[in-house]
Length: 108
Image (cartoon, rainbow, N blue to C red; front, side, top):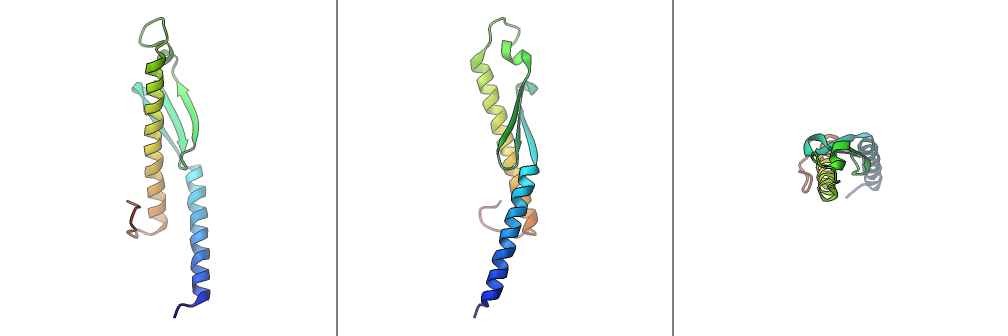
């Protein structure tokens, strides 16, 4: 028979671990770049976009005098997607570290 006090204690520990993971992810910062560093997206481990940096050369295109908006849009999307992948990796790493290497479905 399960001890209700043990279940309550386990749930409390799980909630505490979840809070710790969330705090750690909020403090984790990753960057994704594209176009050889022309665009950099900075994101936290919770996949919140914190900053976009665009080099001036990316705005005017490669040596032209007319801005290449479509190219810049593609670079921004690529940088954000890369940062998102890195944030996902950070999240998996944090969760696995807190669980002490347990093999749970869906966590890697």
